[in-house]
Length: 528
Image (cartoon, rainbow, N blue to C red; front, side, top):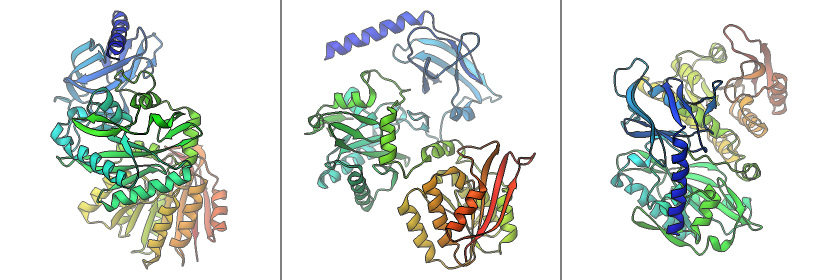
């Protein structure tokens, strides 16, 4: 095995060395890195003052320009950091040969560019394209709580009859390097259920989540078969420990979130062991075969820019079996990761202003699909106790910080309209709270699916019973769509309201204008 691995590395280095002669960086500016690409597609690292911040594939992640050069545009999430000067190095990931090594300046800043978060922790882009304190900048002492949590969770699951093991990047790091991957930012556990149907595995996964929560861990569910366990590191920063469920069906292993391949039972069980940072953890009987199923035959070659290319039939199965409760949520979470923590503007939409003008002071407002909660913050500032609901609540963080600082009556709550248990639990909670209510739904109906729309109107029917009003806007298809919106006929919305026992008080169509980028359908309704 060692000799084959050594010869494989020698071959890779040889191909890269041959390509180096024709690969060169032409320029580096605010648009990105312009270069001439020669040889096979391969990983390029970008370092700022000797720290790897970003990696990309020479051809896959670049745009072909009219002059035959290629442009690697800066990721959107890097843009806000690019103001100042730095020693910028562009180099081959494996051969570590530099194509560019020079002091450069971006913007008008006169300081060294520093990739740090609000707590002052060094961050870089992880495998999901998010800025996180990756393992490369964490000490062993700082990672002790994560390792402890992995031991606690695997032991607890063993006691419950579940044999969990490190999976995905965590298994890859343990097998290939004996430690966490430097460019990774979370830890993964997987298990293969004794059940053989999605429904049974989902029920089992929710029971495991309840057991883990009862032991004091905070959790966040991704889908019917996977959830995250939050771990606080030694310096107070938070790290995710993901638990992915899987099962066998007709000779195939399905393991959330990327594996659906022919596989043998005895390649998983009985479990063996692997070593991670000096600690022994359970491991699949054939970890090499599982890693090949996860990352392909080149899993031994480091790739900080790796991108899962799960076959569409496997994605379709996982979506149908497990992800019906998280429709488009990942897209919204990524969108909010860019701007969700910023302070929202102080203005309000025309829909929110109309609600305020027609609603008695002191009425509780439920802003469903609040997004960054700009309208919710504005309404709370005018004396309306307001709840900002969203299934991606991180978008409201900036608004919540302002509301807390100013003592405004604003709260943020998670509500997932495509997960019945979430909607029904929140509906039951509201039935125990007296007082008049109004509901805002700006671009909610046109940003969810049929299941979400039906659940929303069921929620509105109960929450607004007794005369409460719903104010809803949808995009008609005219003008600019906005992120995540799908054209929706306001007449159809009126029909849905009436089918759920509501009365339509008004229906307007507002064309795009100088003040309005997109055409709107505005519906006001009430429930007696």
